[in-house]
Image (cartoon, rainbow, N blue to C red; front, top):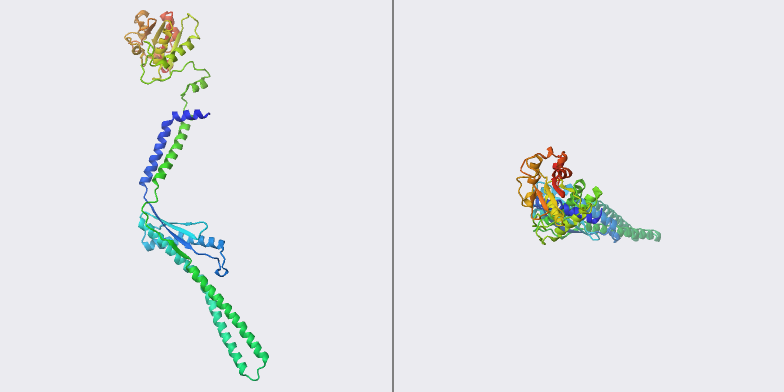
Length: 446
């Protein structure tokens, strides 16, 4: 299928597309209007990290990532949300989200609530809980290490004091030799180095604890938002429009695929394998009969009927009478209008034409040609009047009209009769001229 065919389908089904688009916009706007406004408040925290062991003085990226993810799980866990709900007296646990800002030590804690003040309080409480949990976490980990180092320092101090006392006693002892004094001095020096090392480790652990327990700090406190973050009405309407548009196009294509009706001459030619003999352009505010009095306002339509006349007469031997049936599948498709204008075009070419209105459901040719419907085809078929009594003159001398007639007949009663066919009517009328008949296909097939 070519692009222009798709465009033609979309034009033909434009009301489906427009309706689906409008429905999508209305649904999006309605849902946005009915949704409870939600306010989002955010606080930004800094997590200072250097490594799993601060004494190495180098940044451990993997440790930093693990620590940030740990803090994220602490905030979004049920324990923190339950504690916040209890502290603030909330009926439900608040909704908390954490965003880790890439390549930084920053993290955002966001809270949503129907009230902007509640949203701010929840975000602040979550930040304070994280700070407290961080201190508890690292204080608990380092406490045992500090205690062990403290006991070792005390023991080393005691041992060092004993060694110094022993050395002083050796100094006053006259029997002490140089070897014993030298050994005692070396023991004191070794113990002093051990003591210094323990003091350095103790100070490093204490500093590590101090840094880690204060590693989380608030950079930007939360504030009460002025505008709700949800629903995003403008975005929802745009999405509704796009969804409705795509749904409308899809429905239009499905409807077109399921529709068995023909809309264009090209479709008719493709199905019937027969070329069209003429196309009549549409016109607004035109009379049903054009070209009768030389009007040129609707020249495209007049020329179209002339071309149709030429195409039709090319199949008819010169001077030979013939009959033609103009019909349609349903009412309102223009068979009477086409019959009248085609008859006028043929008559203006010099041929004699008789127009017969065989549409017994909705006769209208008498109105178009401004003739009486008191007598006509039905009166002739019921033998109430002869041929001379039903032929009526028009503004063109070689164009006559047989109206439908005043007698009410069931089309089904004559649809199978040879006398209602164009050839049968021509034979009964015994009129040596072209015969144009207008009838409904529904009546012919009933």
